Image (cartoon, rainbow over the protein chains, first blue to last red):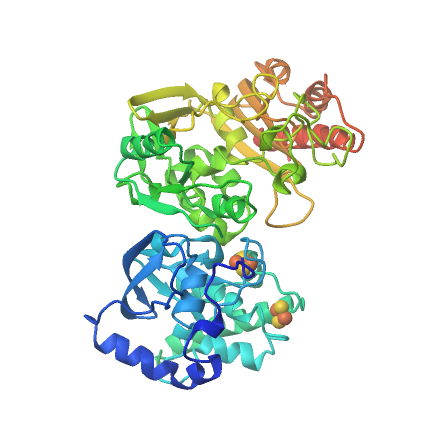
Length: 216
Length: 329
Ligand code: FES
Ligand code: FES
């Protein structure tokens, strides 16, 4: 799909990825603070291209209410990456096999490459950008850093989302439970043992924080 | 991906009518339950819908409802929900285990029971766009080609294997499939839902183009019923059964009163073994009987050039699952 000539490319956008990375935080705050703003996130279409079925949807993205007009055939990954510029969600296979595109939709992990954006109407989606709070990494992300869970890093955001969903349902999982919950996320660098180690450690640390009455 | 319109269905009849109306204007319509597999087929240009009818917006279609007659599972219930449902885990473990064995957590979170039993084959010729029976063509490339994962029973003229894990479980449980069309509903026993290629090689089941699966209904289990799903795969995750068995037995002490034994991964439909079921009925389950049942299970198997290994594998799966259900391992 990434070679689809019909698809808007990065070049069509008026922000480069780098500029965007510098301002994304501010942009999201504005969108969140003005929920009634006109439909956002549309990409200008060159004149003369055939019209395509579009639908207005409302959804929550990383806690912020969004109202968007999407092409019916956009995948959720396409909407997030190409139109909301949330490029932390990665595309590997684009066919529901690798897990790089994993996001959390209403509490459950889904392959965003294999789910249409219009189907997310009324739902709440969390991407890897939604894990850090107030500039501080989520303890799970911190554990990934400490345990060297990312190698090349391409699978990391998907692994984090599967792990986050697991920890929400099962706060202190065993290694076997981690492997089962992350079975839909491939790591081409094959760093599976470090990834599982990080998730188990994040769970154990969370359990310690809870019993000692600490934060979180 | 090609463009198409999405229509959110309000009821199963509404969904069926939208599909029918689209066809009457010369458009191609597809239903999306979870939609994962449909979108892969669209991306691969194997299916080219002008309209996708989204079933996820139909109220209550994902509910599991208990009644005195048994359990009714809405066609949109996810495989994840089925694998976790307490009633299903307690009364129909074969189905909970089959659902839990499908693909990956992300796919089970969106994949539905209706989509799982109505999924298209995963034969590599079909999935790679070869002009085979399943792609509107007139031959099966696996017969003279790469057929290591293909059928040893019921093949010809197509040699696909049915890819669903839940389908053998549903046949073994005596489920009924409730189907909604534009002008009403019909109920079909799971054992009659699937279609052999010799009946119609282009399809895998009796669904018309404008019909959707409204529910899968399971009868209340008879006292003493025990069941298991056992699946052999060539890797640990995200794959279909090379060989699997759904075994449901009504036990009275050591004795099996009635058995249902249905194989996955070996035939174009869930493959029921009536001769094995008869052998097991009213017999105490012993190692010896299980071994004889395993021999009987492969009577009539016709392997292709690269899949004869499925014969000893099928024997092992039948023997082992029968013993497990009887509590002998
Ligand atoms: S990019 Fe979605 S699963 Fe690989
Ligand atoms: S860290 Fe490279 S793919 Fe997982």
